[in-house]
Every structure is written in structure tokens, then in C-alpha cells.
Length: 312
Image (tube, one colour):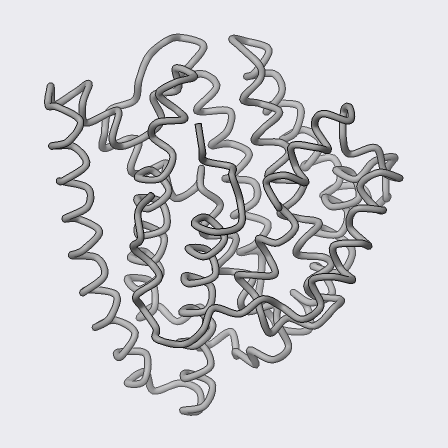
């Protein structure tokens, strides 16, 4: 288990105080909305503590915010796990159907019959749409979700053809496959963040966000490579470096760990640069840094101590 992100701040990693009630509400919502195919799928989701993910990343979210964000991540996790059980063209078609469903809800407002429909509706027309309008956030979140679904289909096509991507192509797609961009964008949806869009989407923050996403993605690959290797999924930088550079696994791990250490240093410098941006108040910039640190440390805490998602 890698321990990359827990050193960014010295503060205690928090759990959102609304987690207990929100977890109960989401559990009831998922069962009534027929999210799970069967009891085994529900048992697996509960065991992996998927509902605790958002509560770790967003400890300051209010109950309504945490409820909607938890539902979103639960659906995305379930889609990812469901696709992992499929093979060949069936897996490709699964992601194509999700893309079609997502586009359908974008064109037509309607709750639909199940949890997935409801989440897509909330993104396009419901709570997320209202918060997007209130905070003037544009279509960034919608684009991140669509790219996540497209990345799932891209992976499925590669697996169906038994054709690993080049490392350059994989790194390009990685930011979409992981959902890291979705998590980052959601920081701007929290009332307590109080982040003006002119600051949050400022062009000078793009390099910082790129660093954060790469850190999250590489850390995930260092955590999950054994599990993915076991099931024959080559979408992992450790595995791809072994295959394409013809190097031993310890060498691949060492190279990626060194890259992560370098990115940590870059991250530390870039967060300080936030304070130099000439938009927004000092306290807003400080809140952004605090929110990013909470997100990174919360994600590390969830992976290390809460979920068994990446265990063999």
C-alpha cells in the first residue's frame, strides 16, 4: 500500500459529521431505486465502504451536499465494478449504453425509473444544475462525467482487442478514467468553500490541478496494480511499464514512486502560488488550499484504512 498523500498536511484527517445519516439515506435510496443487481453486489459495496468516500474527501460539506455527492460517487463506483465483470463487446456496449443514457437525460428532463437515471437527472436538471447556476460554474462537471464514461468505453475497447495502449496514450486518458477531475470540480459546489469561479477556474490553477490529478492517478495505480494484474487488466502504469519497457516490476514501481515524490514537491510549490493570484480574497485562496489538502488526505485515508476495494 503506498502512502503518498497523507503527508501533505499535518492536520487530522476528518470524517464528515453528516456521514451517519447520509449513509442511511443513501442505503435506503439505493435499495428502493434498484441500484444493485443482487444482494452480492450490495454486500460488496457495503464492504468497500463506498459511501464513506465522499465523507472523507469533503468533510465540510453540509448534509444536502454530501447526500448528492455520495449518490453520484456510489453510482460511478457501481458502474465501474459492473463493467469489470463484463468481457469483449458486451463491456463496450455497456459503456455505450451509459453514454446514450447520459445524453438522453441531457436532452430531456425526467427522473427515470432507477438510481442511475436519477443521478443523471440531478446532474443535468436537478441539484447539481442548480448549484452550477448559483455558483456560475459552467459545464465543467458535466464534461468530466462524460469523459469518465468515454474513458470506460475506451478501456473496454482495448481489452476487447487485447491491445494495451501506449504509455503516452494511457497517461493522457488516465485523468478521465480515475474520476479525479470530478472530485476536484466538486470542491466548488460546497457552500463553505465559497470559491468564486474566477478563482477556481483561473488559468493559472490549471498546472496545479494537473499535478493533483496525476498524483491521484499514479497513487491509485501503485495501490491497485496487483488486483488489476490478477484479472488481466493492463490499464495500470506499473503493468504497462513492465510490458513496454521490458523491465522488472520492482524497477517499474521505483520509477513511479520517484515520479510521485517529484510531484509532491511540485504540488507544495504550486499551492503556495495560489496566494499570488490576483483574483479573490486571501481567505478564499486559503480555503481552496485547505479543501484540496482535505480531499487528498481524505482519499488516502479512505484507500488505506476504510475500503478493501484495491485488495486482492
